[in-house]
Image 1 (cartoon, each protein chain N blue to C red):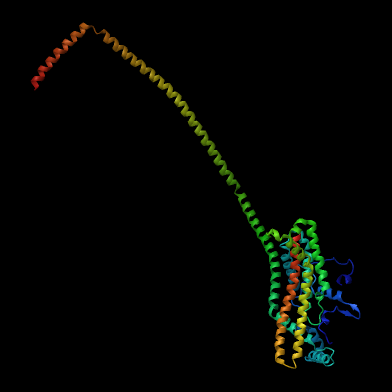
Image 2 (cartoon, rainbow over the protein chains, first blue to last red):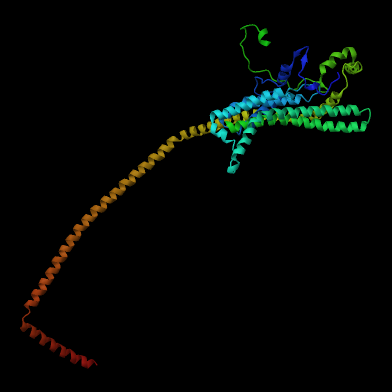
Length: 227
Length: 228
């Protein structure tokens, strides 16, 4: 099929049936279900070890009330990681390139942290709007700035993930198009471009993992401030 | 599936022990295609059968443009090469790591079991030692009994000695009293006799005795001069 550059970002449809839900749920099929055994096979052992690692890292800075968030943060991390990494395969659709999906993830979670903070410790939450040790004349301006930065957090979270992944995928498409187009004309430059593409692919693998981690890390940081 | 095919309530329902995991996973060639596929085609097409099938399919898709070579192909080649490189390079390390995790888990449980066994063995040895000690109980009691008897004896003799000393002190006192009394009587009597004798000496007797002494002295002096 002849693809334009943006066909990979359109929500998949089959005969008019939207497949977005399938593409969101499919990565879960690839993770092994925990068996009834004590000593499991290698894949289950590694999965368990990985989940322990993530949960421990996320929960160490949080107090006891924050441990209620362990399940959602770990599952969010696994979700984003698998979706991002699977999106690097050819002809796949990456749901996290859609701004709607990322905002749908970021906004409610951020709002939950904000409301938890305002509900349980309102003065401490509002106190975060003013950093320590600011000179007195700067206080009004700084409060405006901090409020703006607070309110822009969900937008930043969603857009960061979307932009990183979309830009990466688009770059891969463009450079591979360049390689394909240059191949009959100047094979040498084509090979150079292919080398660049290889490096870019490695970068994209790293970016996929880092972006998932950063998303969850920032949420846990917002939680730390407010819980 | 197993539960559906098993007749109801004819055997003891038991989910343990679980059947052991197979030693190795299914055999695959080129990491993708199971060995059974090649075995399936072998009787009819021999060794090269599956390869011919694969090549033919690929060429069919390419020539009929069912699979179009576009930019995604290049991207696919890149990501697949990265994946294959990663798997080849780090595959065995990851497998060894997973095995190590399992080993540590089993080793921890074994360590607990061995600790318990060791503790019980130590307890058994100590119990045996206590039983051996019980056999020597009679010697212990005899020694203790002797000890106590000796203590009692010593105590009795000490008290006996004390009694003896006290009685002797009292008797010595009486003896000393008697001696003192006699001494005093003697002295008193001597003094009385001397006093009376001195009183009885009259001055006449005194003169006579002095004259006699002078005569004696003169006689002695005469004999003494002669000696010189």
